Amino acid sequence: MDNIGNILMSEQAIRQESVMLPHFHYDMPALYPADSGPYIPVIAICQMLGIRADTHIQRWRKLLLWATARKLPVYLPKRGKRLVWCLPLGEVPFLYSCFNWQCVPPERRVQLLRAAEEGNRISGLAYQAMQQSYKAMRHLLFTTLTNFTDFDANLQRCAKNLAPSLEDEFRLWLNDHIQYGRSLFRETIACARQLLHEQGDLPIVDGLHINLDGNVIDTFSMPLLPIVPRKGSKQLFENIEKLTQWYQELIAFLEEQGLWLNGG
Image: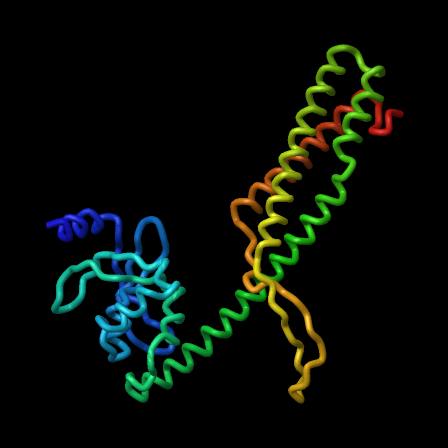
């Protein structure tokens, strides 16, 4: 009863369609939960490949890949609707290296090879994009921490130098604005340091540059998983945007008062 109840509760939130898997020319059921992209039933993948679903799924469930798997209700011909294990469509190619290809028909092996090669190419491009994002973020972190070294002290000096030139009302506004800027600065620095610390915890591996003759011409180090924390990086960019807006408001105020940041 619990299984049937879960299916009934999930039906309204999940849409089922048919998709054609690249390279295999095979219609595959795809499930679209309301909170994510398409999922593919693993049992249908096994059926396409001609391998036993029960034994393979039992073994695959021990893999890290299975962390994103979900049990979703799918309608299967001759079997009706049932809850089965499903993987995100983008992760299906990773299954292709998790079983013996000798278990599938020869024509499927050719298709598997093409799909695996395409998956490797896409994974390589994705990894390069991750590396570029990692390097860009690391550069931004060092730039932020370096350029903001004397920021807090400069703000306090700015307020001290400019205050005598302002009337009480404008002096209060400047003081409040400076304090707000200092608060934003502290939040930005704390966020940058946390991100830098998290990047420092990533495992580093040695890489090689090899020429066409197969000789090593250079060595380098790089993170094994060049991950940029999404939440932390989003917070950093938001803080930098707030600081930029804060600075623009400060400049506009000083221009209205006929003053400059150097107190002139």
